[in-house]
Image 1: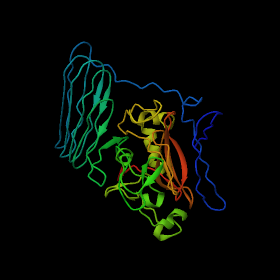
Image 2: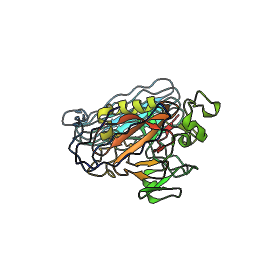
Image 3: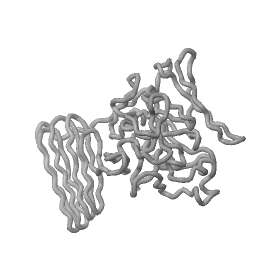
Length: 346
């Protein structure tokens, strides 16, 4: 967790703090919303795909084991690809086309099938492993898509990062207690902002627990128990990510210091704060709500809950800012603050 310093003259909205009990007060930090004088961490170079064959086409020989089969084909100079290993009663194939320098790799599957995407112009693409079903990848630059999910506020596209499948946008499930931003206030009714940024939830609402759990540890009251994984308000087969699962996401995209750059959407962030969205996560700045109905920071900051508690009154979450490249881990008041929710597949 880091403390952001605001230099004199920078515009920064006053954060309202939720009481965490007699012995605890949470402090929220903020950076200038008008660009400020503090540049974010410098971006790290992104690696590109390797060189293929020299001035021509190349072919590869694939092998299969069990009852599986594998094949590969290439066309266009300087791009090569090898087939994967066939699994038991499954199949794996890769077909790559394109030109320029690039690479493509395919995954293997057992009892299902897997297909890989195409890469061109110096990029790379990798496919997701399937088990007992069909998984496919599409696009370039390493983006791997899963199956769409039908759920209230959806449908939701999904994306695979580090072997885990995430919703590609914030949850817009209209459960009692959730709110939509409407200018500088919050509304129970759906608004255009919710269609873009999703709804905001206090912690107990997001966890689908009684409101008393906003001031109790999950281990102190059976009504407030947290399961692993914890479904919360996500659809069946999905859950609210834990603190550790958020950390794994950051690691999968290169570490917390530059994760924001690669996870933020290419559009929707103010002050040229957009990211490169290399992995298709498409994070948008849904702002922050307060239990008294006040709302702000849309376009500048995005905050998301985890299912992991910090104390009886607080839980861990993540936030991204328009003018920084990192993803920061922090803790937030369970009852006083309303944040966004992303769902992760079990």
